[in-house]
Image 1 (tube, helix red, strand yellow):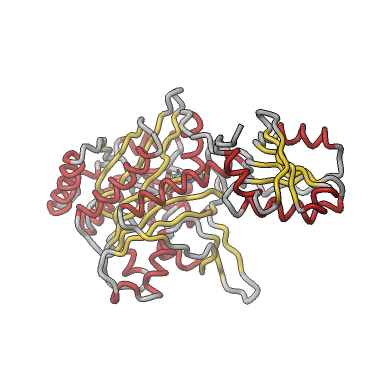
Image 2 (spheres, rainbow, N blue to C red):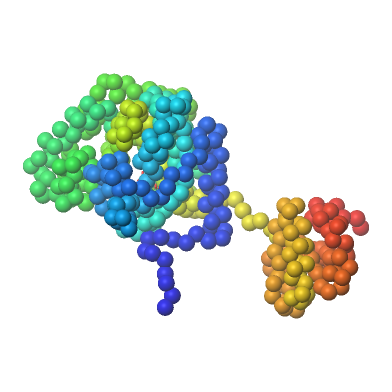
Length: 428
Ligand code: AMP
């Protein structure tokens, strides 16, 4: 019996894989323009990293992690997000003391969450994101938001809505947490089991509950904005003013809390509705974090970052027909006549490939007519025919598939002749 892929994973094949590479390249290039460097943390980390980093109160840690014991009985986890791993990498490699701050990194790769698979929601998906660590300025937040916005614009996405909010500093959050505990005290017994847990671990998470009956209760909960300290209010106003200055549109949404526990001060999400009216929800999200680096054993420095779901980006780009034609046309199709010509055919293909032309070879012992049909189907511009005679004379028959003209060239002049024909400069 055939074996299928694991539920919630998906295969990315051929042209689709090209579109992933395109999206990742565009974003990587913009990240370099903003002076971010690439980083590749491992997929596998000790589970404690995410429990301490992402937080026991988050759904990701409580319900969605791929955690197992390795052969030495250590608990390891397939990363459910990148930020904790990058902070671990920075702390472990002692990058903070020896570098000018902030450290600016970008990353891309698969993450794993045991969620209920549905449209746009996978158990293994890809994220592209950045972290800027070691500078607490409100303007570091703005630069990171501007980077994300520039990436989306460079991909051609116009209908982006940036939702933004402040969670305030530690004092603000402690006060708000106390207010939420007070509000939910006599209601939590009638709420879902998750909310009962959240009430104990991190009542802020209750605001994220998706159960309709609980959402009705949440509607009347105290608003976060009332509990934000003066310093955090001022910081947030600085962020908003700078966004306005940069003409980056935003909507303040004081219900935005984000699902990961490490955030403080600015948090934001990028939402997208395609031209066809399909609402993709959040295609990316991020925020500032004050305590994460310290929490993971590093110095007491803040950071800010975001992450985009590459699958969602590819979906919206395809929906809005914003993906460029990435197909690379085949310059030549090498057609060896008989098995004895295969070795020579490899040399012929190599000659053109080294000049930068995409070349394919027919390794099926089929009739010449059949090979021509294949060359046409593949969109090859040249057919290069080699048989016994050509091997003996060290030559190649070059046929222009469009004009149907055919010449015999020596192996030495193969590259230059093909270049002439492909550039449309051949002599008549
Ligand atoms: P988060 O790390 O939860 O802030 O998510 C960042 C982005 O990753 C989201 O805005 C989505 O675009 C994407 N994402 C999150 N969960 C999934 C999932 N299960 N499947 C596909 N994309 C996801």
